[in-house]
Length: 494
Image (tube, rainbow, N blue to C red; front, side, top):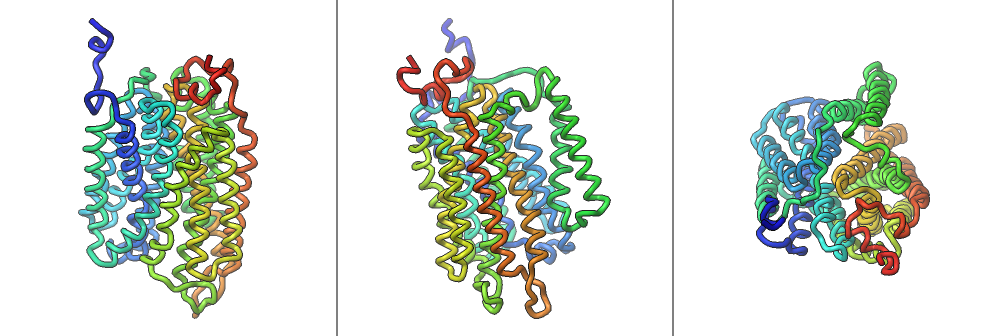
C-alpha cells in the first residue's frame, strides 16, 4: 500500500491546495477577527446606557477581550502545533461566532462581557493562518502571502471602524454583532472547504501547568496595566497584582526551562533572531497604539479647543480607512524587499517609516487631510513591519513550532499595545486644558504621546539592528523546511 493510502489526511479540500484560494480565505479570516476588535468602539460611550451599568463596569466589555486574547494566543498556537493548525483555526472561528451571537442577544452587562471574552479567544486566527501558509504554500509565494495575512489585522480594523459607526448610527446596535456572527460563519465554511490540514505536528502531551501559569501571569500583568489608572497606581490592588505578575511569570519561566514538553520553548525564544524580533514587536505594538488613541480624539474634540476638529465617529472611521488599504498595498512591497534584502531590512525600514509618520503628525494636526496623510504614512510602515516579523520568526524556528512561535510574537505586540494604553492614558490625564469646566487632553499632551510613539518606533529600529543577518547554508537547522531554504542563494542550496 502506498504511503498516500496508508496515511489518512483530514484536509479540507480534495486535491492539492490552490495558493490563491488559501491566501484569500485565510486573509478573510484575519480580517473578520480584526473587525471583532473594532465593532464595539462606536458604542463604548453608550454602553452604560445600553446595558444599564456603570461606565467602570462596562469597560470590562473591552478588558475581557484583551485578557482572553492574551491567554488564548500562546495556548491555541501550541495546540495547533500539536494537534493540527486547521483544527484550532476552526475552533477559534467557532468561538468568535459563539461570542458574537451571545453579544447580539445581550441586553445586560454579564452576557456582553462573556460574549466579548469568547470573541477574544479567537485572537490566534492570524498566527495560525500564517503558520498554515508556511506548511502548505509554495516557497516562492510565502513572503507575500504571510505579509498579506499579517496586514489583514490592520485592514480589518481600519475598514471595520467606519462600517461599525455607520451601522451604530442607523440601526440597532445588536446588528453589529449579528454581522460579526455571519462573517465568522462564512469564514468557517470557507476554511472547511478550501484549507488543508498541515501534516507538520509535534504530538506529545500538552503542558497544562505551563498554560495555567502563563495565563495567570498574563492576566495579572494586563489587569495591572489596563486597570491601574482606574484603581490607582499605588493602590493595594494594583501593586498586589503587579507583584503577583512578576512572581508568577518568573516561576513559570523556571518551570518551562525544566519541562520536557514546554508550552513555550524558552531556549528557542532566546535565539537572537527570535528574541530581538519579539522585543522589536513590543516596541512596535507600543508605537502603533499611539495613533489609534491620538487621531480619533483629535478628530472628535470640539473645534473651540483650537486643535480639535469636531467630527463624528463615522468621519473618524472614514479618515482612518485609507490606512488599511495602504497596509494591504505595502504588504506586496514588503514581500519584495524581504525576498531581495531579507526581513530584517524590511522591519527596519518599516520602523523608520512609522517614526517619520509620528514626527509628521507633531507638525501636521490641524486639518482632516493632515491626519489622513499621517495615518497612511504610519499604515505604510506598519504594513512593512507586519510582513517582516512572521518571516523573521519562521526563519528561526522549526516547522513543528511555527504556530506557537508566531502566536508568542503576536502576544508581544499586544503587550506593547497594553503598555502604550497605560502610559498614554497617564500623560493625557496629566496634561489637560480646561474646556467649559471639563478637563480635556491638551494639544501638547497629544504631541508628547506622538513623540513617544516616534521614539518607540526608533527603539524598534535599534532592536531590529541586532537581529543576525541571514544564515549561511551550513547554519540551516535540519528541521527547517523548503520555505526557509528557498530564501538562500542557489549556491548555498546546492
